[in-house]
Amino acid sequence: MSTALPTRPCPEGYGPTLVAHAFIGGEWREQGSGGVFERRNPSNRADLVAVAPLCGAADVAQACAAARRAWPSWAATPAPRRGAIVGRLAELLRQRKETLARFVTREIGKPLREARGSVQEAIDTAEFFQSEGRRLYGQTVPSELPLKQLYTFRRPLGVVGAISAGNFPIAVPSWKLVPALLCGNTAVWKASDDTPGIATLFARLWEEAGLPPGVLNLVHGAGKGGAGEALVDAVRTGGVDKISFTGSTEVGRHIGEVSGRALQVPSLELGGKNPLVVMADANLDAAVEGALWASFGTGGQRCTSAGNIVLDRPIAAEFRRRFVAAARALKVGDPSRDETVFYGPMMNERFLKGWLAQREVGLAEGATLALDGSRLAPDSGWFVGPRIFDGVRIDMRIAQEECFGPTVNLVEVDGFDEALRVANGTPYGLSSAVYTRNAQWMLRFQTDIRAGMCSINNSTTGAEAHLPFGGNGWSGNGTRESGIWVLDAYTRWQAVNVDLSDSLQLAQIDTAAEGAKRGLDWAALAPKG
Image (cartoon, rainbow, N blue to C red; front, side):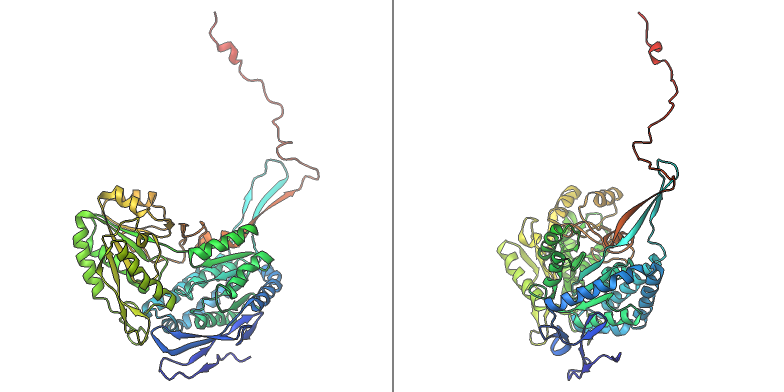
């Protein structure tokens, strides 16, 4: 078929409506088994960004079968050749970076500078893993027996099911798909129903980079009751050998249960209620800047967004004054129209409703509003102002429950020990940060915080492609994305035992020491009489 993507004109001037596709066995499909669905611009609901196929169980089954058929040939492709395709993907992403970033901004309302950074993260990931195609190191191990050689090798798992969230619609899928495919797996990717357009464009670049048919398969649609649930169910039926999921803790628990019954280990990157601690000796200018970004960057719609700002009491009042003033001055608006906005709209109505409901929960618990964010321009898009709760205790619901949106809590403490206890006072353990000049506090914080990621004098948000990303507790199951550590998620270790002795040698049996020499007469050294 033609490489041109079908589009429809859009009267709002944002650009044409993209006709998104599913991608199954190398075939692009405009229709799913459930028909089609729409994705509209959260900044302006009149702008129809994409029309996408609504995929269901039948489509997922076909995608899994296509991936299974493609796996033997792809696994047998030398890893450096797989890496070369990943390298071409990096170059194509670089060439299309601005177009992709602007589409991300339109589809989910992410500010353009953040959208550019998201595409750059995919570029960085592809560049990093291209070189892994020439490594994927195993080890040689010395044997305890003669004329024997022992080796270890990384082997691919098979078919990987990848389910991604919409807030990082190209960066997070690259974290999953790039290493999974590089390691010799094939994949079925269920993209977020918030981002069918950018998912289609990303899959197109994979095809353009030279990926063989069936190695990557893309389905769209709903999670529960839709393509997402069907992909998870494929674990039970043997359609996939591994699930990698980014999303809510509730769904992650279900995936963990299904995977456990199949004796599989899923990769789960889940929610967070991330603490940002500001001690009395902190640089307050830096702390306010970091807290502002951690709390309200991407409109607070990051799993690593700050949920609780823990303030040492001597600086609490001054920090509060500066922080509230800075938040009140933030510019909120349509990032497709104005590149200077700090954040754009809520990405979907579900997040908006949760954010609105959280206000009443906090007030009912006795928290006060240092800044009462409210719905903005309700007739155009899903815009809301920043919200800051004050007088919050760590045992309150609003301090314990994740809320995807521009909202944060101020919690006052007395000294470092209480700050650390409060920072560890939620069931989550994804990201964390502390602002202090005290080297001992820095060391204690990074040692004792129960989060998978820790920042010193920096924001809770932000990741680099070569550093492990993931959390503990309700934030994940200990698996990690990015860097060399993710290779363990997409490969299994194989031990190889080669005996060249022409006879059966038995480890632990044929290795007893022979001809031991008589040692010192230790009894003769004992006192006499």
